Length: 408
Image (cartoon, rainbow, N blue to C red; front, side):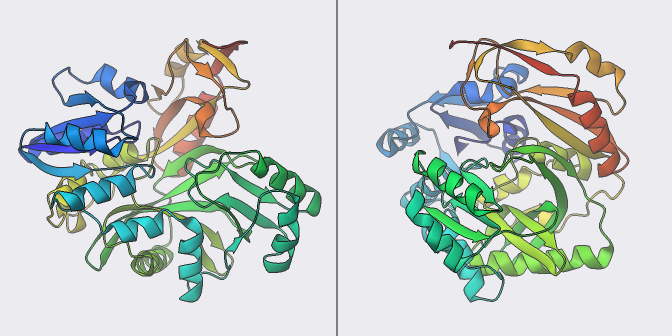
């Protein structure tokens, strides 16, 4: 029988195919752009999975592609963008899957903030703001400064602005007015403290914290993710407190089953939500979960797709696995990627350093202010997340994308 993935994160296909095979099924990827999975497809055996080219923005075309799949047993989605269509298609076909209404709520960051605020789980309200100069007064009245402006349906840290003064506020609103937002602009309070994400797995009232990931973002007003490390070493009481908190947050937000990647700020008064993604973490998060916990965590995805309680919820997890850090390597300016300098130096660095390309030479890099400008990632291991992160960073600064002016 076949388990279908309606698009996917850029990394993790190999682990997903392996998990499906272990369950006695074959993985089939429906995608509108194979180039997103260039690294995974290049290193996997040709027969590891089936890939079907289809316009995944066209739900009718996806339905026809699903009709052609032999013995369809389950539907997986690991993206934010296709999470609602996947839930609706699973419901149509009587396959296990989340309630589309719950997915619709989680895809609206403003509604999530409002829901948590109404239930005492967020100090900050969410305020709808018209992009452009007319929105400044509403931000100052309802939220104050500093504040964060967001696209309610944004992904990959796109269309997020941190504003500390009125000049920055007006500049951010002007920029937002020029963007094609996926949702609607809203404002919320700026949270002071380091950024983390809780990597969790839930099933009908039970949420297990698989670990906490540290996250580093750019200093620019427009947020860009730069680096991450896992697992953060926390005092046991603090870790238990985060696990209890994230369980309450997910329950109130209506997330009942599957992975969640919950970003939060650890403020002086405890954790405060940034956003919820009802999926496994992106970039190399899934890979470092597998390596650190010494198990293929994607088996839980297969279990969920088949409608059964994931064994990972109850399995003992490795306590002595290595920690990992990774750094995103960005192009410094738009243009055509010609390659990278410094890749031949990575083997000299400690930490079993690895390079994961995100783009191929010859591709155009249009945006460099968010994750779309990432050309690849450097991964390193260490005894602790801190040591792994330092190793990854020291190696990553030697990798320099070569970008020529023009378009491909």
